[in-house]
Length: 458
Image (cartoon, rainbow, N blue to C red; front, side, top):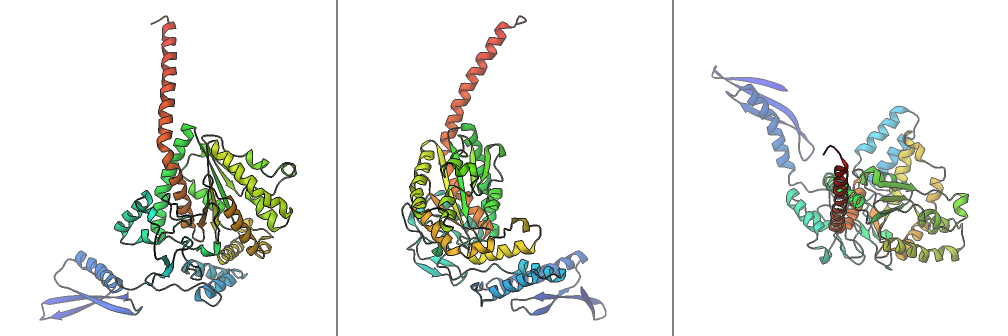
């Protein structure tokens, strides 16, 4: 800190402290504070506090810039390509510089999408202040739900209109779930109309705080499900390569009891599995009552991969949609709650994640030689997913499209769906636990009385 002492009248002195401060126009300025007759601690406090207050005052009404689309000619696209090129160099310093660019690059919105996961048919406008796509109207049936009240509470605490920018499910059914898009039964599906970079009008910090609360509640609900033993939960995860199925599994279920959760990954069918019908290997992995099972990929591979790669005739994979819905209806009728999630990432985000894996040797084990070959059939996979979601989303086993370009928002959307699904079952589980507890107490007391009656010392 630079200091200059000025003598006045031979008796008084003034200490001037100057330091650089960045203003709203990005120009470095010198701010001086005069302090006469103040203790040293007070002068130091003023020297630190005044520039912060001035900087805040200058920036408080500064509008947020409208984000640019990430395209081949956009600044975000050029920055991404520069970072990728640097990361692929052999020189360590260039690779390190490329990683620094990746860490500093802002997460730009894909403005070419038609809305942040808004319900089909909802008018879409552009918020001039934030640059986000918003709907002119929200589903009135969401008003008054638990999630809507939570949104209003957060708006009051943070001064942001979060609840007015939520991603409304395409079904409009409500259920208090607004971050994931619920596919209506029998309705058309247009994945291009759902923004993979949607954030629900939340910042990352707010979103992560909400997720932590939901994850803790999910852990409590899973404990009740396990103890009551009246229901089971089957979670199906599907998505393109690098969509985050493994990460969602680790993060969303981080607060649940490991004894009550099992993850089942489905790879290419083995010769034994190929000798049975396509549902055989799946049915034997479904959860018993009291358990939670998460499918990392699932029986839907039979109408996705086998369709795109033409491994079976068209007549066979077309008939499988009816078999799948009948199978899931059977599970639901026997007490299994089925929730299916399609983790929706953009083609540009997938490319970026693949290149990041190539640049980081600790993540290279996730790569497959066919990853780049599969990208050539992106459009065919999207068409296969759209038909599978439309044909197999039912009231008993609905599909949810989860915007997954932002990992924190992906986790939040999944946790909200699961909590809002299990929450109505809480009272029934508590009643079952009380009944079970009374039954066990009766048996324990009877056994204790029998043992005491036979004790010769009593």
